[in-house]
View: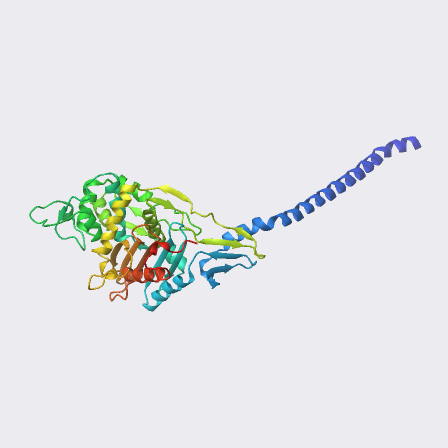
Length: 427
């Protein structure tokens, strides 16, 4: 009877023993895992600071937080990391002060050192919407490209050898607006003539409309537009809006209107400055940069850009660049920007030749505003600076982009010998 009872309880004893062993094993495994996880967590925290700092300053950099300190524009993050920008405090303050003084509804300016590609001015102001930041007004493609697009048109005509740029093109009217009749020849009415050099300098809509409609396809225009920065993202430390270029497939004269500056194209001031820096650099695009250095809370460098800006892609050939530069010089010497750069006695106001392109376009809704562009570089030979300025005025204008550019260039080069403007800053 007793043996029978022992046999009856034997499985129960075996179960209890096995259960106790399982509990012990589970406790040991859990404890080991906990130690391993705890150790991994501590090691991650010790190794993380540099990686975390890099990510933090990239995410937290903000032009609106820049302040002047020791002759530099600096942003200090919450953890003590310091970002030093390439912005020149005096020039930045000058531009912002000018925009506020003239109560500009919308305005922005970019200035870049060459060949380093360092951004010295990145300023914007809006009387109509004071909440808009420097970055929003400079980096967003909020303005019509207007006649600045004629630089793209001229590049297509020159690069493909489509025309002889010294061959006169005759026209009738079209200096202000553009109508369908401007795209065709009329020997009886076309009594005025200009070659491509003068047409770009005078921003002649009729000549550019005719040449675009006659020699350029939609696909060719979009390809060159993309090459020169439209419909693509330009590299920069801050996000840059894509400048938009749209050409209708249904309009008979779409390419003609686009080539003359009356198409569907928007442009950011940053892109305009990048385009002029590309031409000034011999047709080679360079990545513009704005971060001078980044240091951790102890002052140790955690980021410093390379000496030369990146990208280095050849977008235009040397002959095209040479011809374009001569055309852009005509804008200042005898064309649409002359009034701002020459006195009434025909004396050039700056001690070095400036080149550039103007652009003007008006809108009536919701109220009248006139957009005026001026983008270019200086000096003409061995350029040291490229720039783009847009000023939007009400019906009674206060200042224009050409006048502000002249004042900004004068201020920039006045720090150096007037005899050697090519020796501007590059550090």
